[in-house]
Amino acid sequence: MSQIGGTTVAKNVRNIMAEIIGYEVAQAYTWTGQKKTLSMKNSKLADTIIAIVLKYDNNTIAEIEACMQEWLRRSGDRMRALKKK
Image (cartoon, rainbow, N blue to C red; front, side, top):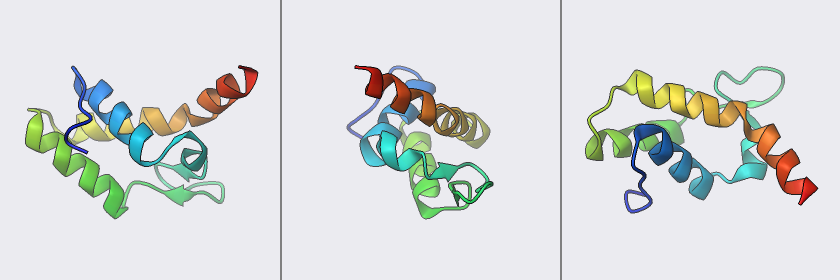
């Protein structure tokens, strides 16, 4: 995962999550696990992504979590865009 990278913390997190989770699986998750979805917030996967980004970038956990939340929030938009193609 550390080889995926990105030029900013947001790009780094987006690239890692897209590679590991994928767009379809992301629709089953929300950050807090509301509305019969799985929670990413307290998962080992979230902890692993945070640890990797912290190891290679000088960011805070809050910044990384915010990027992860935004990526999950937009998973439905990405799937709709892919279906239009």
